[in-house]
Image (cartoon, rainbow, N blue to C red):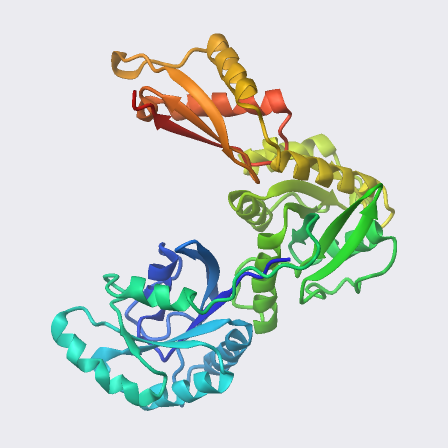
Length: 433
């Protein structure tokens, strides 16, 4: 298996943690406001720097002695974040100097023994660099001057952070991995138990029983498959307790190390936004995706269910949708063969001659448009990657190929290959000569 490293950002209120979180993530994920204590919910996102993928956790700002009712919970979540983290960034404010709580926070960070980085924020100009040396006294080594707002120094900080992160850890198992994910109480553990033909995991009607991911290797015909039963993924809510939140962190890590993801949904209600969000996330991560609708013993209209999924998530039309009952076992036998089929196609290698023949046939059936009076020509294509497959197409005017024609080419490829459950990336590039 592989382990995705985690970096926690901690600090007192209003030092700019959410701004730094957004900067390191490369997007505006967290709400940023000048009002102290805006961040009360935990936030996490994927980040990528110099070839390293990792999770960032943004924590609530600590304000010792505050009468804020959320403060106790915030302090608890920071301690949990430190338990989950592989490295920690303590953020302080250059403009306000060393605050008594910065000293306490530094002590807390040192106790963890984790690789730690002291980031001094709001160093927006050269004169403020003179404010940085004071922070050596916190005992966390070199202070890293940054401007989370403008990005100054964030690259140097990231270079230092990823230098201490653990790489992907491998076990001897190198076969297909199936991650079973979904909202709490959709029956994930029951399905895993059914696949394993024994009660490997606790099964209960209480949501969130599975706090950690549990791996089980199952034999199927002459092959093996590793099944990962993950914690339930609940939509973001202030009612989510701290342990459940960090179970979600672990669940995303499990998705990251899976080859194929079974996104489970509950037949008793049509897909909700969180169901779609989970499927979309796995798809965007390049995983093979199967949509599994559990509890069909309740009696449902499968055609209406399929229509409801596709209506809410258009990419579902490119995914296998299977219906089963973990309780009775009906339909569960579809899961493993579908997973193996999706896993095989995710890693497929296509010959260049086949790809170009398919491109030629697609163009023959429907020629590319000619925006601005300039005919678009597709010259040559080849596979440049797998897991998932990536196809490079050379054209004379790639920028002029409209989105609807790109979708047509992708659908033509999918129909030729019978590609279900696998993202397909087609890249268009201008031919130089």
